[in-house]
Length: 77
Image (cartoon, rainbow, N blue to C red; front, side):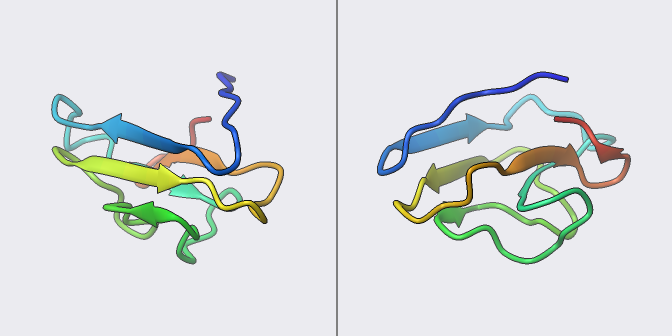
């Protein structure tokens, strides 16, 4: 399983321009959790996102771990 280390207070962009509609990308707080991820814009934790950019400003009080998933297939990262 791939992992990334992000720093609190920094902005990260996930460019989904070439992502297949078969695998819509989303950031989630836990596997299958569809509640909004604080600090994320352009993220759809329910249906996933394709063809846009997700911006994530990591809050200073962010959880120690969030995950990225294919919204259709379950846990990917």
